[in-house]
Amino acid sequence: MITGDLKPVAEIVPTIAEFKKVLIVGCGGCVSVCLTGGDREARQLAPELAAERHYTDHPPEFMVQTIERQCETDWLETYFQIPEGVDAVLSLACGAGVQTMAAVYDPLPVIPALNTTFLGANIKQGVFQEMCRGCGDCVLAYTGGICPVARCAKGLYNGPCGGTSNGSCEIRTDVPCAWAMIFYRLKRMERLDLMLEVRTPPDWRPGGGAGPRELKAHIKEP
Ligand code: SF4
Ligand code: SF4
Image (cartoon, rainbow, N blue to C red; front, top):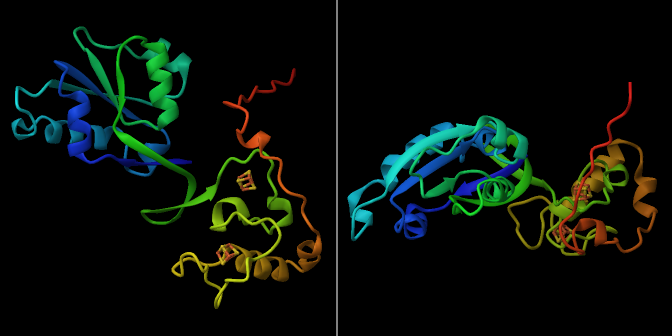
């Protein structure tokens, strides 16, 4: 899932202060699961943004709506309507949702309320950890299901850097070394032979080095 962090109110206010009627739009997708951009967060944000003390003039009028997925052009076009008089949208979606809304409602300003952070997983209650960088050339089959791109601080492909200390990363000692985890996982799998295979330098083009990537859904005929 994609995770996001709500921007501080002090950062959001200057981006919306010039508008008269702002529609705050939550997203029921990933950012709802990580408790930063769903309907509840959108409704909590409205009164905070409406406080007079943030503005030299009057605050905008705020309305709140949520759609299941802001990143779906079809859903927006079919199920979502911008109320009369709204002159800006404040989106609590990830960057993909913000840009989809901006394209569908062009030229209405669509302003992000979140910082999109990473592609991660819920590792325990309330804690999400980065797991994947969307590199486009997945090597998890060779690394015991642990991603060296996202989880090694240096993104190394062929074993640890040498700074590993007692299983911790030398860059951040509070996180485990990805390559130590890979080693022990492969050992438990009795697949340490995979550690001996030298991986060629990755081809970063599938990872987005050549402009925005596209995925075309393959629909099989029944
Ligand atoms: S190797 Fe690439 S695609 Fe696979 S989990 Fe890591 S970043 Fe994601
Ligand atoms: S200590 Fe491990 S995780 Fe940290 S940079 Fe080196 S190989 Fe990567």
